[in-house]
Length: 362
Figure 1: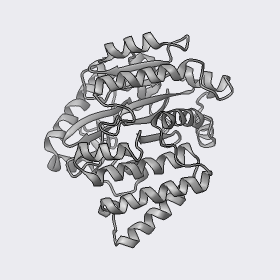
Figure 2 (figure 1 turned 180 degrees about the vertical axis):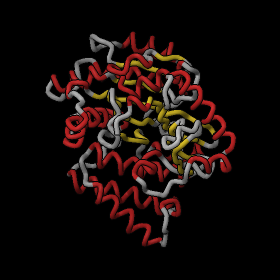
Figure 3 (figure 1 turned 30 degrees about the vertical axis):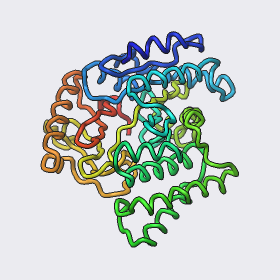
C-alpha cells in the first residue's frame, strides 16, 4: 500500500528533499497538478490511481532529480539512490514479489516522462530485473517458458541499445537470422528454445560490443537505467525536438519505475494506444490500435501490423467495454479528449498513461 510506501520512503529519506512520489492501491502522493515535477506520465499515473483505475504500482523520480543530476556532473544527487532502494522495498511489500528473487521476481519498467510529450525522443526499458536466475522464477510462476524467454530477450535488446549504447542493428540482425534458421515468419512463431538461444546470442553481443558482460544484478540494472533516462533528456534527438517545439531545456525529465504487467502472455493479452474520440470526425468512440501477445514497443516500433482497436470489441468484449468506460471517465475528469496507453495481461486491463490532447506534442 502507498501508506507503507510513504512510511518506508520517509524513514529512509536520505536526499534532503523529496525526489520520489509513489502510487498504488488506490492512493498516490502526486496528482494531475504536478506535471512540472512528475512529468506528464507520472502525474497521469498518480491521478488515475486516485480515481480508482487499474494502474500497476510504482514510483516517480522527479524532474528536480534530473536537473540536480546534471548540476552534479551527471551523478545522482546524494541520498537519492538510498531513497530509490526504499521505494523498491515498498513495491516488494505491496506486490509480494522480491527484486532479484529466483522464486518470485519483481520486474519493473523504467520510463521517461517530461512535462510535455516528446514521442519517440526519450527512453524506456521493459522487463528490468531479469537475469539467468530470475528467468526461472518467471517461467515457473506463469507456467509459460516461451513467454519468460521472450521477455528476457526483449529486455536484453532494449537494455543493450538504450542503456549500454549497443547499435540496435546488431540485435536485429541476430533476430532476423534466428527466424530464418527456424523458418519463422513472425516473431511470435519463435519457440522457447529459439528464444533461449537468442538470449545467449544477445548477451554475447553485449559483451563483444561493450567489453563487459551483461550486468546481471537487478540493482545495478536499475541504477544504469535511471541514469540512461536522465541522459536521454540531453540526447541530440531530444534537443532537436525541443528546439523545434520551443520546449525549454531546463524542464528535465522524470523517471517512472512501474511494476511490470505483460501483454505478451498469449492471445488473451495485449497492448495498445487509443484516443477517446475519433480525431477525424470527433465521434465519441475509441480510436487507435492494439496488438495481442505483444509489448508496448511492438506497437510503437511497428514491428507487427496492429489492427484497429475496434477489433478488440469482438476479440475481447469485456476488456473493450472496460476501456470504453475508463475513457469516458477520464475525458470527463480532464474535460478534454485523452490519449491512452494500456496493457492487457491474461484478460485484465491495466492503464499505463493518460494525457490530454492539448498537452500532447507530436
